[in-house]
Image (cartoon, rainbow, N blue to C red; front, top):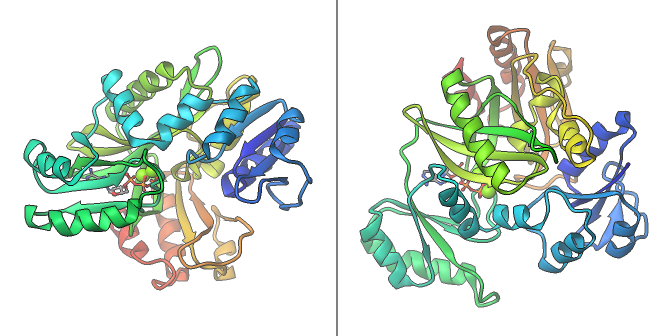
Length: 378
Ligand code: ATP
Ligand code: MG
Ligand code: MG
């Protein structure tokens, strides 16, 4: 089987690495350079989108902010999974919220904003504080504002107008109630063409400056897991979803509220490479290639640490049992996702022990907040 991934970043790379032993060959379409490349070596195949599409059996995506023309061309081929609708829903907070309401999955109270007057009304209808998010193109906390009091409306809306510009008449904002969550968790699951669903254990997530920094699993009771599985099934069934889908939640006193969806493999599922029977990358390929789904059972409790903006780790990390480095082969840029470290243990106690052993090798200036995040959960 030949799979073409829209997007040529680390997620396509890890799909290619997972596909190789199955005999699935993965190519990536770089939407910026408009060329088909090898996702690991980045060697250029000298193909445009049309020939990349003609040459593959299945098209999938590693991100949801795909230019419209590429989305339409991919969908028209009849080979695209999870398909145009799922990608559009994941890439537009208005469609995402509509879908959640339609299938009765709890999410934060919200209002779509087209003007400053709408924002004023939202402070009345929803209350304060508010989180304001651009409807399109947000990721890693970009395109977001916090509105704490009504006298900030003018200043915040002025910033938003600059951010939105007048480039796209389709641009809008979504105002969301600020959720006083106890913690953030996510669930990653996979669904195939027959509608079979396998869901990994819930992952607990820690963010630093809006970016995921640290995750671990298992992290929830069976009662909470059931809530996540129910939400997953409702959403995935409605989309007739094929592939891996990630759902981010707020845990508010034992009730899950959806934050957002990602119609793809997800950073908070990287632990599955060491911690699950079949990892999220292989399961995504199995689903889109119509192979039987792999088990999503947790085999080793695993933590995942993101390496952001740094290209070197103390080599003593390799000496620690259960510690696995995954570099993405990218050029260093401040804050850029360069790789991640999985830390697996035979049980949760030994996983947390290995995290504590690893942490002193990861300096605070390269891993801000990590020491505290690990301390808080161990
Ligand atoms: P991602 O990189 O995960 O796609 P994103 O830019 O789409 O990020 P969100 O996940 O919507 O952004 O928000 C980023 C973070 O901001 C959340 O993980 C959470 O910590 C915080 N946050 C977002 N919405 C709310 C809310 N309504 N109430 C409280 N905190 C929030
Ligand atoms: Mg997002
Ligand atoms: Mg998010």
